[in-house]
Length: 185
Image (cartoon, rainbow, N blue to C red; front, side, top):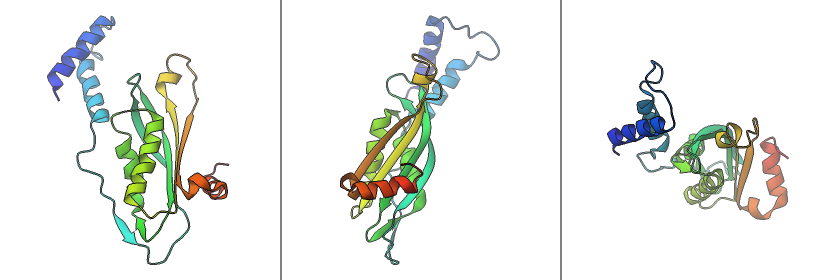
């Protein structure tokens, strides 16, 4: 990463857009822009490590973590989209540490993204770390600032995407149970 070049480019962009950066509040805007995008676009340093445990109690019901907050940057407009994710699975021989479901969402949302891809990537990665699952469900509900602050200006509009794997993909009754447990119909 070349931070100095990024700050210079941000300053040039702001000037080209006619933004006055001489005032006290805007004097370091180019630096702050670069700091923000650096944080939002930098992938997590370490690979995802799933902490799992023997399913000694033979739990066969859903394990669901609801309302995991996340933020991502739209690959089309470089504006944030923010929302919540619900991630769940039917365990097999192993149980995944609960915090890992939230960590998976946070890690996946990094970088330039589109919501549809984040949804599928979370489901696919969960399927890799819990390979003997009975089904996986992912629901992402987000507000896209590229749609609410500009363009159509559809304030309050939310975009919902889903991904189903295993039993949830093929069994409408199982999918309905998952949706009911997450407060959706």
